[in-house]
Length: 449
Ligand SMILES: Cc1ncc(COP(=O)(O)O)c(C=O)c1O
Image (cartoon, rainbow, N blue to C red; front, side):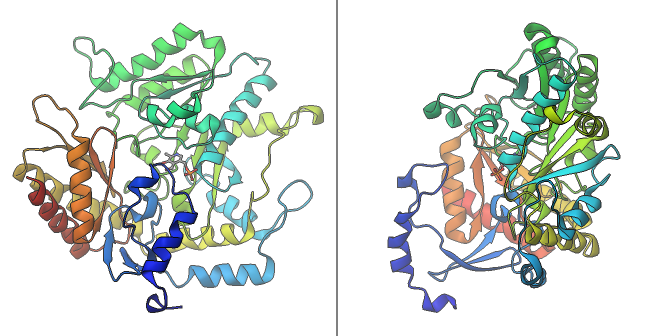
């Protein structure tokens, strides 16, 4: 079916039959109905062509329109699309992807449990924390510490770990035993900073204080995105994770790295944790593992946690499992997706293009007084829109207006946090396309002055 055979007006009308996530239906006006996409470009049924500055939802890492992954999926589906991955049955694709991932992010992360996406991965991580401490005779270690402005997903526990209050309001969340400390946002830190301390040090101290306040015997895990995404693109300071790791070790708290966005090359290194010394006990992943071509996620657990699961008596089994774990077609696509990233050196490209993109954003900061803190790594960037640089007050209304103006000009970005325009284009983006982002964004900013 080609674009022209789809009647845009009819589709627009019929689109009201579905709910679209995370905003009021009234805001879903004039949506881009994407019928086709190629590289960084989306093509709408109304003839619009838009550069997707977000690569979908931070996930289409190899870019749209790859013609190999459909072949891989078809071949796998013709042989075996899916089979149970519970006890007694498994499949080559999930075996080979787990093998490929063993030791890939960190030498101690060698065992994978597959899920269908990021929220499920974090749910699985929390249950594994509970399980681990129960097996070690410490069932009271059930509190999970997270950070304000974190985004960990929308299922009940994942949304409770999420630190954005509007995700809680109408659902009575967070559930008990989920706590939040300030995120290490050096531009706008919500906690207290002592004299001589950096924000990173203060934010790490906040973790230790929270553990002591709650009682270390009640705290089971700490979850953090290496770079915070949907909550406002927050970079941790350089020694934040060194300190966090040491604190987690000191108080026997499992460290969960949520690499759902930052995994698979997004930050110009294979994993966000490679920028710092995180050494997670559990890593959650999703999105970039298949570049969104099929849904897939998972957790990787440390050898220590794996051994606890392996050595448990039958009556204390890790009773966790979801139908689509180890989905053969999704895993086959995941394997080839990672190979394509390796062959095309997309992580290196993310690093190089990210530097070009960051320099472009800095030029816009020089030009427009309402642009301030510009930060990022690889192809994960935030451009802060403020009422004024002195007060550092985020201007969400203006960020929204710029995003709308950008969309009218053919550039998709997304306002997040207090007024940050987020960018996370495909890792295969070219220098010309990076320059197009800057040009279109500059024009959009001009239009709201
Ligand atoms: C860091 C992080 N964790 C978890 C999730 C949830 O993933 P999903 O939407 O696949 O459930 C997201 C989604 O954006 C995310 O950014």
